[in-house]
Each structure stands twice: as structure tokens, then as C-alpha cells.
Image (cartoon, helix red, strand yellow):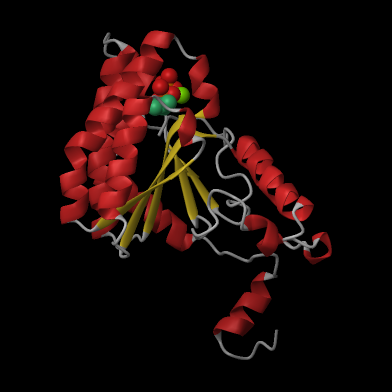
Amino acid sequence: MDGNGRWAKSRGLPRIEGHRRGVETVRRTIEAANDFGIEYLTLYAFSVENWKRPEEEVGALMNLLDHFLRKETKTLIKNRVRLRTIGRTEDLPPKVRRELDRTVAATAEFTEHTLVLALNYGSRTEVLDAARAYAAGVAEGRIDPDDLSWESFARHLYTADLPDPDLVIRTSGETRVSNFLLLQAAYAEFVFLPIYWPDFGREEFAEALHEFNRRERRFGRTGDQLVAVASGSGTS
Ligand code: IPE
Ligand code: MG
């Protein structure tokens, strides 16, 4: 979700106004994802690097998150959306943590749609946290390092019980990944949109999904192999 600041600046408004509009886009996007039948929607809301922003902006983002959770929990329940988080949420302000815990608990039973908020998230931090948890398991004799595999290691990531993303959309025209789900997005398709996050609407979302559907996902195979598998003549 990139470009709130530039959206505001281009209108002569304070950055925080861009973030406010960004929250409206979040609301709209959750609703659209539900309508499009998307089971898992992950929003990169606050990165481990975002603490470097001016204190006033960080505070404003935390307040918006707090208000969003207070206001939207009802809607999430109504639409049967489960809330999950990834990231070091323990370092968020206590009032935000409280609201998160409340909303996560209130929506835990839903299985149709999952909204994942990446909060105080960074892929490198996630790998460090996973490596630490893995090493602790080895030290305690619960884990045999000879059994190390991607699956056994990935169980220690924040995303242990979440599927890998199929599609990653970044708005604002920047074409970088910025420490987002680096390992999980190993085979994801990327769509970079030249619009600011507040301008991302249902139509732009649908268009990104169409673009995704046009892509050929090979997962390391050749295009001919995929044709063979699809027509039932493939053997492996
Ligand atoms: C939103 O956009 C991203 C968040 C951290 C919430 P930005 O705040 O990064 O907007 P730009 O990139 O400065 O335009
Ligand atoms: Mg940005």
C-alpha cells in the first residue's frame, strides 16, 4: 500500500490526510477481495523500517490503526473475515495491541476469508525470528537439524499456517519489494501499478487479477511441460 504521502502532497494536503484516505482504500479493498472470492488478503500496513519516519507520522499511523480496528471489527464479523497479523506486534503501542487482540479473538472462528495485516513486519526480521525459534528447538532437543527442509523451517515463520501469496500488488509506481514476504513470494506474480494507494479501487484490483490470470506460472518447468500436464499427457 504505497503512495499515501505523494497522493496528499500532490493535492497540497498533509501526509496524514493521505493515510486517512488510505484507510478508506483498505476498507474498499477488503470488501472487493471478499466479492472476488479471495481467501487471503495481506496488507503491508507498517514495516519495521517505518519507525524511522517522523514521530508525529508514526503516531498518526498508530492512531489510524487503532480507530480502524475499533470501527471495522463489526464489519469484519458481519462479513465473516478472520483477522491475523504478521510481524513483531509485541512492539506496537499497548492500545493498538489490545485492539488487535480483541479483533483477532472476535474473528478467530471464521474460515472463508482471512485478512492478514503485516504490522511491524520485515522479511529479514521474520527470518531472524524463525532462525531463533528453530535454534531453540534444536537446543532443547525437539528438532533434529538433519531433518531440516524448507517445510520444517517454514513452520517457524510468522506465516506458518498461511499459504504463500500468488499475487503481490504494489501501488505508487515504485518497482521494489521493500522487505515484504521475500521468501513466501518466491513464486508469486508481481503487479506494479502507477497509481497512489488512495486511488486504488475495485476496477484497478479487478484489472490486476486479470493480469494475474494472463500470466503463465511455470514453477521452474518449461512452457511445453505445462501444456502436457494440462492435457493429461504429462508424467511428472
Ligand atoms: C503508505 O504510503 C505506506 C505506509 C507506510 C502506510 P507512504 O506513506 O509510503 O506514501 P509515500 O510513499 O510517501 O507517497
Ligand atoms: Mg512509500
